[in-house]
Image (cartoon, rainbow, N blue to C red; front, side):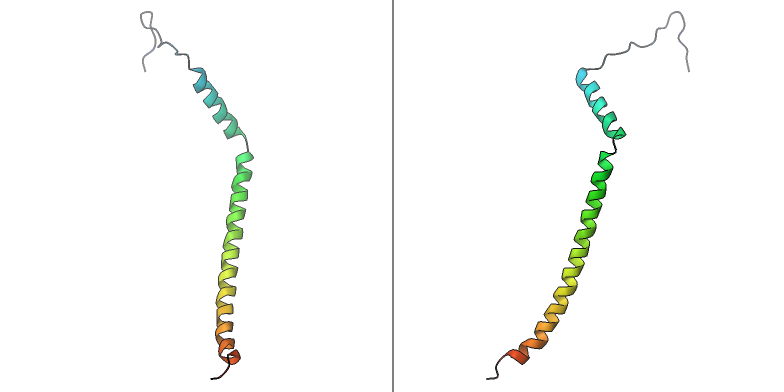
Length: 79
């Protein structure tokens, strides 16, 4: 790596636009914040509840269908 001698100067430091500084500040605050973790936990909880509901409806639905198939001929009047 070359050092900066008497003839060489370091590259000039460019001043960043205020919008870029604002975005960087927002990103740093979001990374430091743990509020996003609770949102992820709520999302996982909602997904788990949805899976349980779908499983229960599928199980009850198939059992209910079998019950109706068994009861329907018994209840229907004979011609």
